[in-house]
Length: 345
Image (cartoon, rainbow, N blue to C red):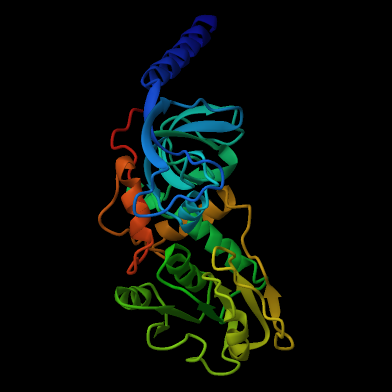
């Protein structure tokens, strides 16, 4: 019995050592190196550069992940533009677990995961186990890497409405971006009987394909000008332009909700809301971890959600071009960053 335990332990140690030995000491990563609060703008993005840096080691409660996919979120660009981001950047992604340090969860080396809250524009990244979940089996790493931030944010905002969406009408103000194309699908998956959104160009057909019942071309008509009085139960304002709350009030039924995803557009609640309409100035949640990611993964694997990754994808050295693309008209769905193509475990 003692020999059996000793051999088993030796085998485990040997396996761990081989796995860790395969991790290089250096990696490629994209870093932002501005002077703090000094803006960094397109088309040059002079503060962004691909560098060779040390592979990080996971602190207790964290794991090391070899990154296989990531994405460009508006917050990534906002923080670089304003000079706030420093060091390795990137907020979400997907990859393969290489090392786990003291997580109480069941993550192990070799697991395929997706996550938020990490420095994902790199070949390897550490992430808190509280900010990760198992990747949907139905998604590739590239597609999965584009989903976590936008989908988890939209899920939490829709849940913040504080009522079941079953048989309700939900309006998503901007359908074709990262939070929008997921918000439209999630509203349907959570039971909404009618989903309304605004898009233009190729985004119109995509919104209809993803389940939107009514799509307003925002180049031709304001979303809330197109809606009847008392025709909507929940407005998820994921774009957040000033004045949107006032424009929306006539369309929201008594007992309904208007909620804002805050961002660079500085949207605000209405100063004169309709009686019986609740307003939520910030539906963004800090909790975008396992529970939200697991709900979303299940919906993907059940075929109730679909990714939409734009072509082309971008490598680490092409992150500046990917940032510029996000700021160019015609973005529909998500822009993918592919940090590496080789799995070491």
